[in-house]
Length: 306
Image (tube, rainbow, N blue to C red; front, top):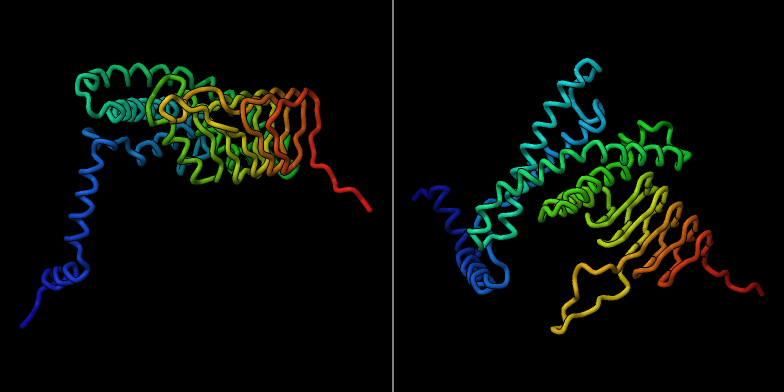
């Protein structure tokens, strides 16, 4: 007797207990539905947002991230076309993000499209400002790394520029109140570079992360002009104040402030709402939970010599 491929596969699934596993998973999802509401609308698209970030990179740095050749004469048409693409994708993804955030409230979702168009329009107006910041970041990377041969090399190759492009876009969207989209954009760069910057973190011009892997910058961190971090630096929270129910209070300032011209070397950990004063240098592998005066140099104490 001949068996069809469908019959063979059905027998395999039966032996593996697929039906029972499916039933158990469905039961779990139904039990947890009140704690984790299932979205009733389309989810934001990782693919579309990746396409949008590619177009944004093309607008900021024409010719660096496109397959086709680039000439000055084609710049205006290309940039205009990409801006239209960015606005179209962003407004739709913000709409999906708003609907996702209010997945169980149809009345709120009726307002989603208008809110999304307003947010996307406000974001588009900030693109020249974002590009100016990124240009200063590229120059900081070139001037701060003896191995860099040109500013163009830092734009094209350096993880610091990749993460900062995503962060500066995500931060503007976070500032405008777009739900979930900023975090998706941040996590895209996090997964590629190993650098974790919350979109809420405020970072001024001429910022450079040298090497970068393992850097963590928390939501309420504030970083001034011309600051530089090395790999493995943490700007984190020291403790989490709890509400009456014992849950962490969200949104309060709890991460460090770095004033202008601060350098933090590899492996340093700075925790809590402390201020590192202007012009200070924080050495590698130190642990800081208190304010540091301006122009300080903090290093590990060497063990006494015998």
